[in-house]
Image (cartoon, rainbow, N blue to C red; front, side, top):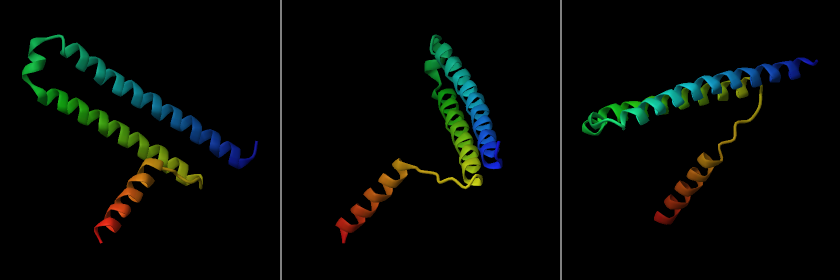
Length: 98
């Protein structure tokens, strides 16, 4: 097996493990939030749900950053089509304002 293929295999395995870990964490948070919604107390405090959503966001951003770093380290491009569309929309809006 070539060095490049071996490196790519390592990236895939690492990314898979990171994704599984993140999905497990997010799934656990969602499960607890859904259970909490079966109690009256859950509806008296939005702070717990806000904290759960914040945790989900942080987990997803951390995993995305790790995976992106691995892809970049392998010399592969990272494509974020949504970010590209947002940039194009912003530039178009700025051009319309001129």
